[in-house]
Amino acid sequence: MFNKHVAKQLSAYCHGELPEQESRRVAEHLLKCERCRKEYTEIKFGVQLASKLPQVTAPAEMWSDIEALLDAQTRKPAFKPKAPRFAFAFNWKFAAVAVALALVATVGVMVYRTYGPRASWPVTSLAGMPKVGGNIINKESRIRVGDALVTDGQSRAEISVGAIGYVEVDPDSRVRLVEAGITEHRLALDRGRIEAKISAPPRLFFVDTPSAQAIDLGCAYTLEVDDAGRGFLHVTSGWVMLDLNGRESYVPMGAMCETRLGVGPGTPYFEDASIPFRDALAKFDFEGGSSDALKIVLDESRDRDSFTLWHLIQRVDGATREVVLDRMIALVGLPKGVTREGIIELNKEMLEEWKDELDTVWF
Image (cartoon, rainbow, N blue to C red; front, side, top):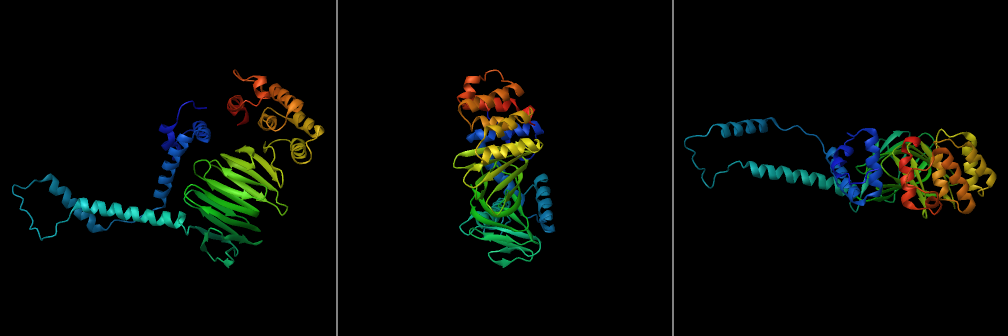
């Protein structure tokens, strides 16, 4: 983990030019450092706006004017008559300012339309006849704050999430646009399934569900909600945090997490965990936390499953915390500077240091 700020690497990180390991470390630093996160937000937003500008071909006569100007700069005449005051003379500085103002106006209109008081995001029909605000969209439409996008059994659609990514909406789903601000992009998934692909700083894109909110930390993931309000998250890139009233689960690439009404997010686990491990974990999280279920979780744990145990340590107390800690130490050991007593007391610095040391084990 970085001990210093990562400002010098933000541009390369923004453009995807860093090696995978270094890119992940920058992403993790951004989770904790408000100063670097603010700077990255500004860099990323500028790049994304620029990428949305239309590409146009300059008129041919403009190049002739530029060539003439360059010729004039390389051949200084012996006598240069002054133009009469009333005659029009082409002013390149004025033209440059005019172009810049036009560019600013174009960006301004786009920003206003995407994030202003009457903000709306583009919606594209991918199959069938999805509806926005009760109206069928044949190909393209826009969704405004307060509108709902609804798909039936044969419909699919795609929402452009401002300038930071997109969300595909699967059949039999209902998604609402809750907030479309520059600092907060928020949808609500009432039922169904979405696939989100977001390129943005942490904590900019949110999805509300009946049993938790998904907070994007720069990633790609699928999120499902069934008719009972239960949610299921599967992260395919980056990290997502699930939260309900302070109950938090950090879910990285290759991991999953279930959420339930009245409880919130369960304990995350990697997708390759054993079936007995996953079944026992669900019973422990949502069916009373029995010691029998916990014993199966601990017995089935591999080194990589210490990721799940790291979360569990912070959700249990007393003798149960000591039992989980003992199993985790047996699997991966304690790094230098991290003590058993500190983890029992839930020392945040030690918990984070232990997590950082386990990157190579988990990934």
